[in-house]
Length: 119
Image (cartoon, rainbow, N blue to C red; front, side, top):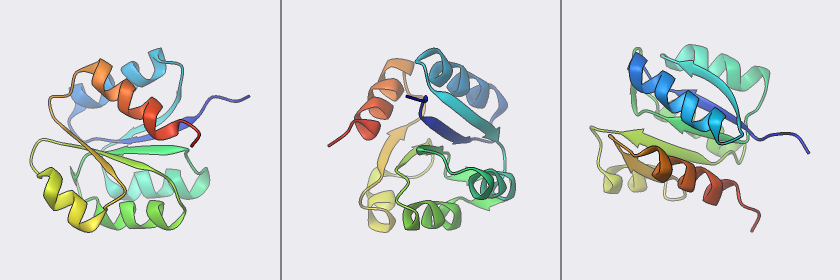
């Protein structure tokens, strides 16, 4: 079986690389990090991920349009943000999981494995 692929969209460089490293060390393939919506959207269109970890505010705006596209393709989303409340995200994306920054690596991997676990 192939490793699940996780799209990472995060514009804060240190957080982005830390997040990618955490996810890779847990045995997942990583697409990214992408600092802007346009490059994340391009990567998603080229090769659909199994899951997306999205910061809400990227270099070129709010990530919700990308999240909508992912949702339309039934790709689960974990929002990873320090600025937007869980309730605000739930209003737009009731199925998505939201983790506040800073998020311990173990909590992120726990969330990823729960989201990707077969029902």
